[in-house]
Length: 131
Figure 1 (cartoon, rainbow, N blue to C red):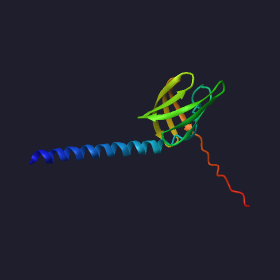
Figure 2: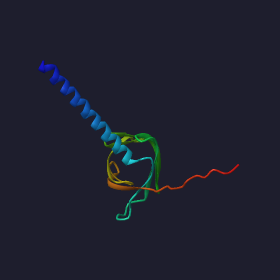
Figure 3: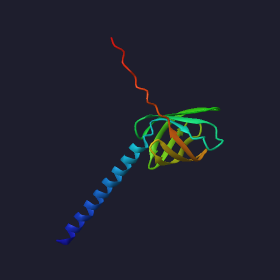
Figure 4: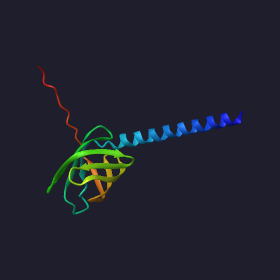
């Protein structure tokens, strides 16, 4: 009699744990709010200005990197707490992403060692013309 109750408790505990983990990831992805344009914070460094524009939904889509020397575009996706950029020439590039504050993320990976990016505020609201 105790075995079925213990098994039921274990199953319920596992289901609750999966729900908590899934909800935490969903909140993190929503807070990250990656879609939009992000600029490399060059205020305290001599880094070359760089901006990355993400299109798509909350956890995958297309990107466009724009710098003085080069422009690159491709697909992106979130994998765990990592951002994966699919570069047409170099393949998959994986970056560790840290959310510091709304509109401020840290990226660590190929070509960007502990880089800080700020989200560009795009508060342009399209107005419909009267017919």
